[in-house]
Amino acid sequence: MSTFVLVHDAWHTGEALEPTASSMREAGHCVYTPTIAGNRPGDPKSVGLEDAIKSVADYLAENNLEDVILLGHGYGGMIITGVADRHPARIRRLVYWNAFVPNNGESLNDIAAYVRLFPCERGDGSIMVPFQVWRETFINDVDLETARKTYDALIPHPEKTLVDKISIAANPKDMKLGRSFINCIDDAGLPDRQPWHLRMSQRLGVFRLAQTPGSHELCFSNPKRLAQAIMDAGRD
Image 1 (cartoon, rainbow, N blue to C red):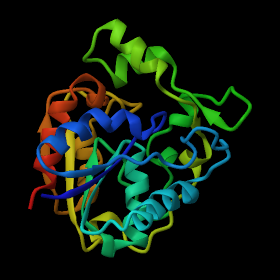
Image 2 (image 1 turned 90 degrees about the vertical axis):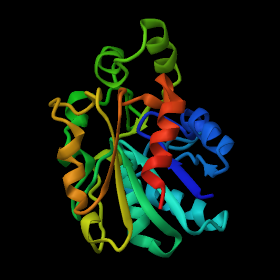
Image 3 (image 1 turned 45 degrees about the vertical axis):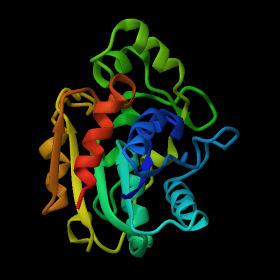
């Protein structure tokens, strides 16, 4: 069986991926769900992208994880790209789940202008997705009660991680690693409503595609379905 590390999206912690991880563990896999720096309780909201990348790279080293299938969700695609650039020997395959695929010198905000859409109003360097955007675009496959419950579990996200530009030696399509893209076909989470596949997936060059029904937040709406998609995307 395989070792998976699941890296969460903006406004989340690793806890959001635990129901999915649990299903994968039942199938015999070893699954980790770290929380990125800036999203952990007590972390300052001044954290930048390099700090966030380093926190996941350090997590792999501290837990002596090798031959890892490293998944990133949304913003997590920025993180796994940076980790793969810095520590490729620890990674077997990158899996982008409706995730941003940055090229060298790009920020998440360069790819999709979330900072403009969700202005920082908190005074601490963080940014928050409005509930109406959450309900209509990110989690459009659940009832209103579930949408509100999941929204209440979100946390303000460090704005700097979205505007910092990534520095990598090779773009993802040129990395000497396996690459997969999971596409939830009902995901309307990109600001201009363009589809994640092919808009993001085409940046991977040669890649494996796994498609499944569901919204951007399939980890909340159907974690078992997401678990199967991840296992399909990560298989040899």
